[in-house]
Image 1 (spheres, one colour):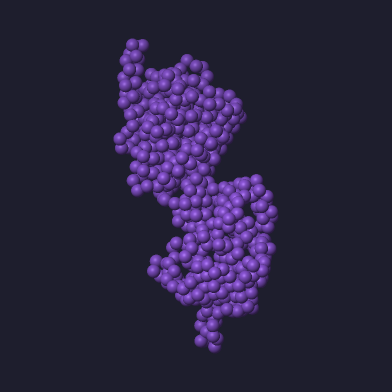
Image 2: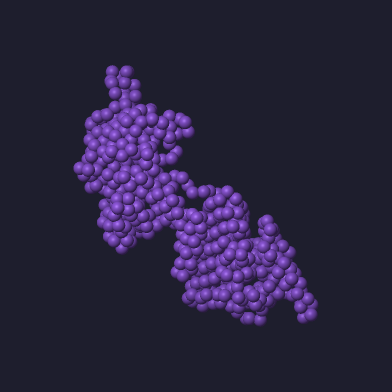
Length: 362
Length: 254
């Protein structure tokens, strides 16, 4: 058995290395058969949930069928629906536990390089702030989170750098009245992929996802979100903004699922793309799958340059055209940067945005 | 202060303003009334330099300066202020920072040093009282999530801080309840002085119960067809515009 697993490991490692190469055109967004990864979903740590600790449970979940509403457990393919996410997961051989009350910096990239995934557990009523700095080098990071009743999990993620290729996979399970604040800033890079899946399994859970994506040169950014409302009276807000110049590309796909018993769900998803050059491209696919009848769900995408009426408004107060444009672009970015709870991350992000705008002017 | 002579303007090659003539002296309050589509709001946009409108004839002179040769920001810095009928929302731009930027842009234009955030906080705190707004309005993004009345009060707050020479109020009373109308008009009256002029565009006479105009103009089909004193607004309130729009039927001359 161990020899067999060893063979598997070699094959998977080769496959994952191949898969983390930056895609040439577009990420293939589809469900993948992940049954072959099941042997790697295991751990000896007793604090891990049974679906992560016991591969047979994971397999049984996988075999439950097509309905995502039968179980409170993640099916792995819920957040393995992109090749890069799958590849990232395939490299994880054991899990480290992050838990407690307060603030913590997690070295996701370093862990991932050693085959360690991160499991974040926020116990009932507790508050945990997790900061993740993925700048600098190629990496593929995996983090699975469980936010228990009445708990609050805040995640700040900054990532990307010139020429690097990174992917990150986030999966968050939310229980009753729990709160999730996820804010991320993606700097111009060679290729960035993010897959974030949130499942609200308890009533009155709240999710806020904010992401600023900056593209330059020939950078590629693939962002996939999936928020599943399984229980009643859940709220979710997603705001994904892009600033794109040169020949950069952003490819966003976001899905909101509202299960039959998730009545009184209130969900908003918005993807706002600011195109700053003729050759930059943004692909946007916001989607809703609603199976309940008493819900409020809104989604939309905008592709625009700076709004002339807003520029005029600022000019009518005395700001020059250049000042007005700069103010609007900064404001566009600040709406997301302000969502970062880490002061140092906000400072880093503002500096990079300023650098980005200065480059635009030159 | 302001002289408009034979002003004509179009949008998408459609004539909106047709030979508008208007002169406002320092310290005067002028009101422009008129039916929908008469060109009132267009006049305010053309005065402040909205790029959608093309001026095809005429002139606008503010304190001896050729306004039509100036960009919108230069017009603002020269003392012109428009309180918008529909103020835009600007997500991510802090309201207080924005007003301070505008304040400093105008100081810079006049060769004065910029005011830092600490000193400005004291300046704006006083003006907040004029419009009975909470400090919380300053911490939010410009107009984002504001009610209609709050947006209008935010316009008046900017007016109070910037202290422009020529204030143009474009339907500042639309969507305001009685209390908000009292607050807004109170701030306008407070700013009034011998050197400052106002051009108030409105549909309703009720605003003029709070702000007494020196001159009332009636605008129709892109022209000012009649001017008079405050009594003219009362007549419009009572009789509507028909008697002005068909003068021959009523034996009147504009």
